[in-house]
Amino acid sequence: MKYNYRGMTIYVEKDYEAMSKAAAEMLLSQVREKHDAVLGLATGSTPIGMYQEVVKAYERGEVDFSKVVSYNLDEYYPIQHDNDQSYHYFMKETLFKHINIKPENTHVPSGETKDVEKTSQEYDNAIYGLGGVDLQVLGIGNNGHIGFNEPAPVFAKGTGLVDLTESTISANSRFFASIDEVPKKAVSMGIATIMTAKKVMLMASGKAKAEIIAATILGEITPDVPASALQLHRNVTFFLDEEAAAVLLETLK
Ligand code: PGA
Image 1 (cartoon, rainbow, N blue to C red):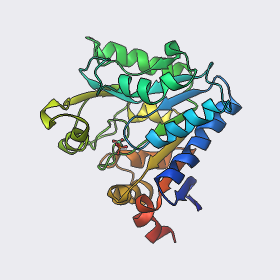
Image 2 (tube, rainbow, N blue to C red):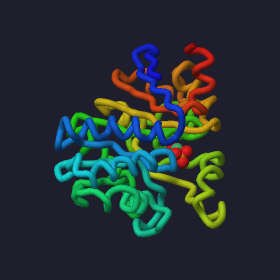
Image 3 (cartoon, protein in one colour):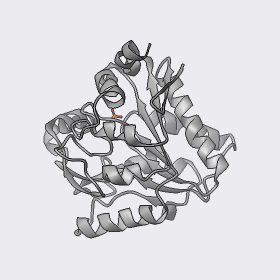
Image 4 (cartoon, rainbow, N blue to C red):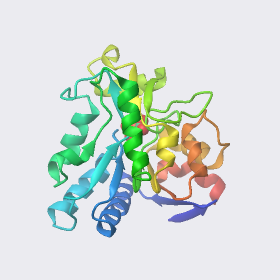
């Protein structure tokens, strides 16, 4: 089902697989329309199914990434890029090594830099210089974070170092041997960086996301729910499965 709410487009799909396919179609269309598209990419468990669909389309010869450029949302800090928990590693293993994107065209914030401020400014300047990415892919944290922009008194502007909240550290500990190994900081694109994207797509799956999806789309625009800033974006599409959409649909129906 497709809904429109205050200029936002919302697709509600039956399950995770259907949501992943619908989201992949949007990303693939972007690359087919513009061969040198600039993609903003996300990590986390939610987009994995979408990336698998993208890889399948590439293997079928339906899409060419040779001119595509990518900028990822975030990276733990500090972390070595060959650490298998880093987002550099995740992107290589999940997507980049399976398609013909050029490694030099892929960008992920550095977890190794000594000068986070300088590299963050360079990262933002590169994105601003492009007039924003063409299509930004987002997941959403249980607390409403996008990238690693956690609930805060004000919206983060540009890319920079952020402290992860207890809720994010605990949610992400499932990927680590123990909670003590989860980095306490990250480098993340800011909300202002994300808002420069020409198009934004946000994916969410499962009932743990149902409340925060409703708050994001229907609630106040507040840095307590960082994703609510997307209500101010001119071109945003949500891909939800029925569980993630359950609370939202109580109001939209
Ligand atoms: P998840 O994370 O896809 O693993 O639920 C989403 C996020 O934290 O942005």
